[in-house]
Each structure stands twice: as C-alpha cells, then as structure tokens.
View 1 (cartoon, each protein chain N blue to C red):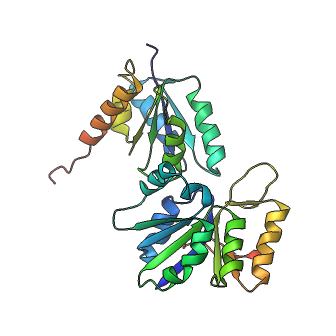
View 2 (cartoon, rainbow over the protein chains, first blue to last red; view 1 turned 90 degrees about the horizontal axis):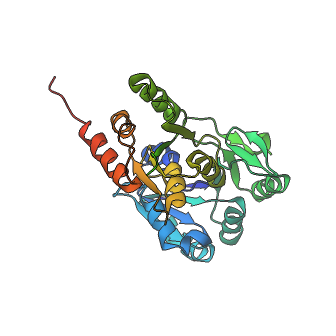
Length: 157
Length: 125
C-alpha cells in the first residue's frame, strides 16, 4: 500500500496522527523524518510511547529517508510519513519526486508567524515554501483530522 | 517538605474540567493547575507547563501515555528529582492526590497511579 499520508506536524507523533489518521487508514507503520530525533535515542523512546504495539515506528534522517523512500513506498502495509517542518518535507519532495500529496497537519504559533488556519501559523517565507512545493505539482492541503475539510494551499498561503 | 503541586496537562479543556471537578468534590482549591496543549507547538507547551510548575516540587498528570502532552511533560521532568510524571490521569487519582501531597514527587506519582488504576472497574450490571 505504501505511504498513504505525507504530513507536516510539529508535534510529530500524537493523538491526531495515531488515532485520527492511523485508525481510518489502518496504518501499520510511521516514518518520522527528523535529523535531531534520529540522533537521540531518548527522544525516540519518548515518541514510541505514543504508539500502540502493533504499529512500527521508523526514525530516519533526511538523507536516510531519501534513500529508503522507494522501500517504504513498496511496503505492502500502509504507512504515514511525518516531518516536523516544511523545509524537511520540501527536501523530501524535491529530492525524491515521490511525494504527490502533502498534508499540513499542525504548524503552531511562534514569533514571526501569523495565523492562517486554527492549526496553521506561517511566516511569509514558510508560505512561499508551501507555494513552491505546490508549484512543482504536489497537491498541498491543510487538514488536521480526516473528518475536516482539506483546505487547498491557495486558501491559507 | 513543601506540599506538592499537581499540574494536569491535557488535550483541549480536559485539564480544566478535572480541576473544577476536584474543587467541587473536595473543596480544596489551588492544589491543581490546568495546562491545555491547544494551539501549542512543543516550545509553547513547554512554556505553559514550566509556568504552571513554578518553583516546584510538582507532579505532572498527563492525559494519554503518548503524544504532545506526554513528550512536553517528560522533557521538562527529565533529570529533575522535584518533578514526576503520571499518565492516564483520571478523577480518582486526583482526588487521592490532593489529600496526599506531603510526599516526594516520585512517591506521590506512584500513589496516584495506584489510586487511579484501582478506580477502573467493570461493575456487574
């Protein structure tokens, strides 16, 4: 089945991902792509705590993800790939040509960002990054949970 | 030993509802503080928890055994003897906690987990 959801969410693994998306998609594995988390066993243990035993969690650096994306896409199981920021997802999309859709699931407030949706705050540069990803033919939408409307990138950037 | 503070870290308004319920039932006010993860990235949630904990000592009660509330709480408590974390918060464990706050955070966390677990039953219909 491969990767059913490419999601940007600065909380990484949490309830919306494991339950909200994981249940309806019947996801069996999660790929968390982040260089810092990949380098920290302690952080990895922390994220594993939020995942039921039947769900595999794979931690990957950006470089590892680019190398292993074909393997995950060929997996017979359903998977979810997470990044914590837009730059990481942009690198995966640019470097692999395998990312057809990107889900913006949660980018929260910090200095310099303004509210675009209840769960999406972006700087102007981040909005431009999103438009650039979409401009390369990737379907970019914001949708925190499956029951919500998928908001097209043009409506929040 | 100073009395422990309890900080409930939850999704949405669950924490505040639990604080209100404990106050209504026990009449004890100020022993518990509520933190919601609404609208927070990890940094903002850490700031909220840090502010609620204050100078400590404290027990952090988290709603789920995984997710952003847990990661925020565990990151803050890592390596600190004056903080302990309990997951799966429920009303029963909080009612026990507010009357047993003269303990170390680790002791209070174990006692709360025990009280909360004992409250989960399946009564005969």
